[in-house]
Image (tube, rainbow, N blue to C red; front, side, top):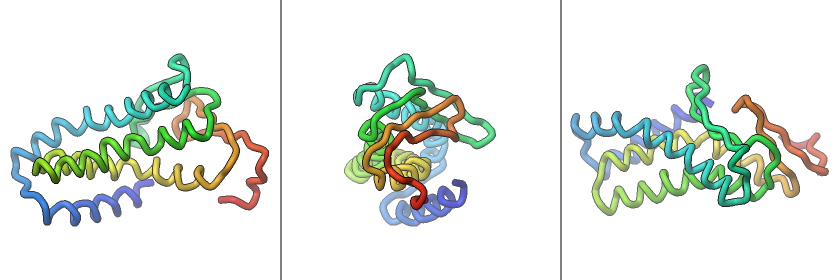
Length: 160
């Protein structure tokens, strides 16, 4: 997952420069706000689980230091619509909408935070891409944020 993040950051920075000026004050402010912004990304995953019918008792937040990620899990089965919505909501709110707002208010800090969020969403995007192809399943997560299970009647042997 590291190479897609690096590639996206390079593309995003190229996308960033024509619109904004970035000074050392902005860079410092962005560094201060980066951690709360990324934590809010995971909180949005959790809120989406709840709004889509997930159980608050099954939602778990954490950090997987070895992989350099924060995570939000819903331990137990959740419906297709729930996982797909949860995967894209932080991308839409903290990435796309925040970037549009940054253009409207000319905020270089918000623009960079939204670009970093979009970059951090690469795992969510890849997962969404693969899961949206399947039609009927339930999704289960476990204690390890790098593992999950799909419960389906579909033949997955020919799918990647």
